[in-house]
Length: 463
Image (tube, rainbow, N blue to C red):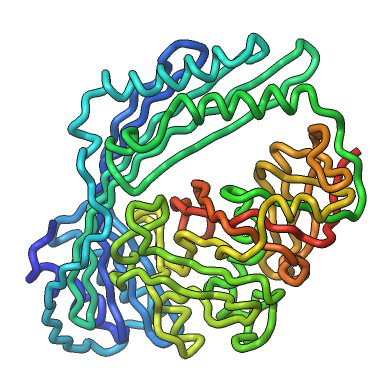
């Protein structure tokens, strides 16, 4: 995207006022989306995002600047201004840097068969209409359906003053369905959002109609559910998107972004027991064609499979280059960003609790009275304390070891560090759910997952 000699010149300019590391991230991304509401296609949007971000470090200090103009002169000007900012207004001494870039080819683990931009909108709209009809026809109580198709084709180039030069291409496709059920007095919603790191061939693997009907089924089920009782009780959390609790309540606290500054309950606890022996947690950015995967992270480091917690013992963190300096650790393929407009930092990719050895039937049967969270919704967490509050999108009471009637309005309240010790049963069937994760470096695609798990006790908010 940019000539090697220009990249070298820009990186040298970035170091000219005393920085000890410089990096340029170049991005060219095509975005397409189609949105259908109430049997009408409301939006068909195509766009392109192009630009470059320049980062300079000196010790633990860092400056980041970006521009949508990737001409040589503008990149040199941006690099100099960033270098000047790092000196905090002091000009400093001009330094010579001799940077020679060596191109590296990353191993491509994510085969794409049909680039979405090469597929016409008529075929994409057909997928949207199929999902819409399946969701709307599920029940006469479904009063509104929104279906959004989206794809991105991101080409990146990363070069730094250590001589690295690497390019990658990331193609992602997703379908999101939201159904609203109403009885004329109350409304309830259901949502499904399958996505993959692949092209339009994703729809040869997933059935849009299935996910559409699931969204409507959740909405209708919750419309007729009783209010959930409140109190402390055992909770069984289903696989797939149930993993959002670990992602939010514990995963963010294992990112070097929080750990390096001491803003995490897990700072300095490697080698210590932080969870029950039933818990092994993994972040794996290498899973072929998974929503949160990539060949390299946004610093050019190959992605890795990292065992964060092994049988309850904290093994490592997710580490980026800057926070790795602060922690004395090497980066491990965990640095991510939304676009060239954001400086990268440590983030999750595909994060999940690994399979255990308990049968799902035994997990359900083990609860005389409690809550079964079949689907999780959104929530909030304080990464410093680990305190969280999550909505249960679809819940059922458990009575005498069996799934009883559906309940709505349930929330799960607790602390991540405490919940980890209360996971006392872990099933065998790991499934993933797709979402967008927001943090300091913007919104990024992330997979969450787990098998069915039982938490021996948690506060359930209800009425």
